[in-house]
Length: 229
Image 1 (cartoon, rainbow, N blue to C red):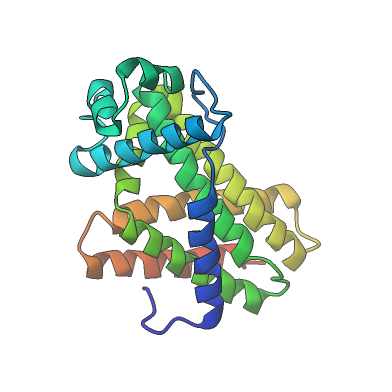
Image 2: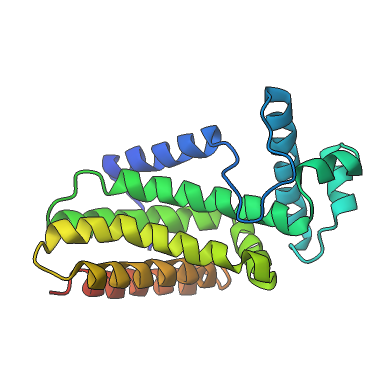
C-alpha cells in the first residue's frame, strides 16, 4: 500500500524516475521501426507519434487503434508514419519498451548501495510503492501490455524485461548471499519480478482498496522469497 508519508529516499528515487522519463529517447525495439530517427526533427516526429498512440490507446485500447487514425492524431501523413513504424505492433512495442526502461531505471537507482538484508527490505519495499504509483498514474500501461500479449511478435518484450529486472535484483542478492548458487538466485529474482508486473496490472484493474491489498501481499511474499536462505 502506498504510504501517506513518503520519506526523502523515496522522493529522491521517484524524482530520478520522473527525470528519466522526461529525458529518455526511444529505445531499440524488438520489432524495429523501418527508419531510425537521427536528426532532431525526426526524433520529435517519433515523439509525436508515440504520444498520439498513447492517447488513442488510453481512450480506446490497443486493439482499436488503427494506423490511419494514428497518422491523423499525430498530424502526419500515413506515408510518413510508415517510414518510422511499419505496423501497429512496432508502435506498441516502442511504447512497451519505453515504459520497461523507465522501470529498470527506477530499479537501478533504488538498489544503489544496498549491501545488507535490512537495506534490501527497505529499498525493495519502496520500489514497489513507486512502481505501483507509476501504474496508478499511467493506467495506459495495462492496455499497452495487453497489446504486447495479443501479438506473437511482441510477447518476448515482457519476458526480456523480467530477465533484465531479475538480473538487477539478482546482483544485489549475490552480495547478500555470497555463498548461494548464482543461477538459483537469478531464477528466483526473475520470477519475483515477473510476478510483480503481473500484480501491478491486476491491482489497477480492480478498486483501489483491493488493489492496495494485492500489492501489500505481493510485497510480503516477494521479500520472504528473495531473502530466504
